[in-house]
Length: 77
Image (cartoon, rainbow, N blue to C red; front, side, top):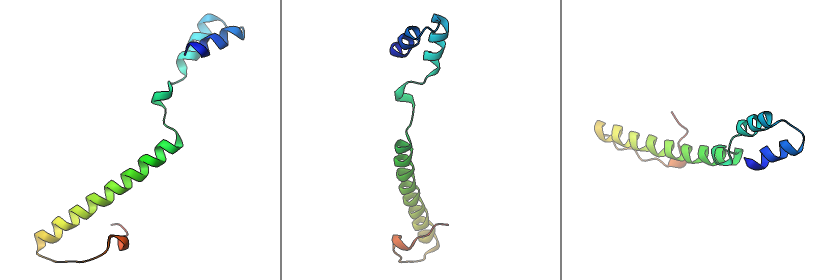
């Protein structure tokens, strides 16, 4: 943040305004990029599919049914 603060000062901005502006900019480690969110979404989709498969297996086992299908043909609920 000090780089941003210093840059504002060099540009002639007052100390208080420079500090406020520098503090308003989030740190890099708390900002997610579009790529970060896309990776997270992909991982969540896989986990949701695995949970759905587990639930279906439990439902089928509880009902005494045997169903064979490929996960490739699964389209959701």
